[in-house]
Amino acid sequence: MRKLIAIFAAALALAACQKPYTTQIDLAVNHEEIILPSSLEGHCFITVYSNSTWTISVTEGANWASLGASSGEGIDYVRLDFTENLGTVERKATVRVSGSGKTCEIIVTQPAA
Image (cartoon, rainbow, N blue to C red; front, side, top):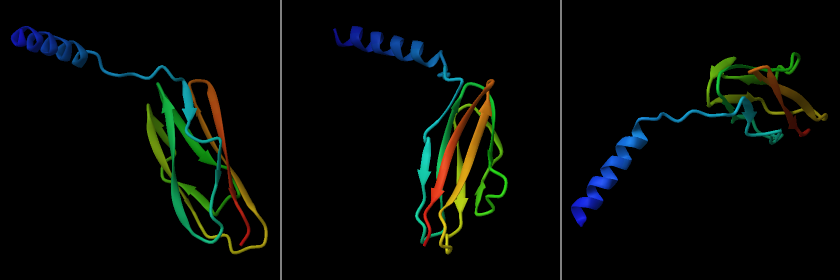
C-alpha cells in the first residue's frame, strides 16, 4: 500500500512540474496609496503583477522620489526611494504603471515635518 501511495505522489509531483505558473492578471499593483514618514529618508517597494511587459514612472517635478527601475516584465518589484521632508508642506507624487493597455496609479504622500 505504501508503494502505491509513493507512486501516486511521484506521478502528481511530475505532473505538477510540467506546467509553469503564469499569471492571468493583465496589470495590478500592491498599493493604491503609500503614506511615507516625514522625518526619514528611505525606501519602500512596489509590487507589479502582470502577464506582459510594463513601464513605471514617477510624476515629473517629484524630485524627492525616484524609482529603481523604469520597466519590467511579469511579476516583479520596484524600489521607491524618497528623501526626508524638511518642509512645512505635505508632498505628493503619483507613480504610474502601464502595460497590457492598462494603467495603474499609486498616490504617494509624505507629510510635512
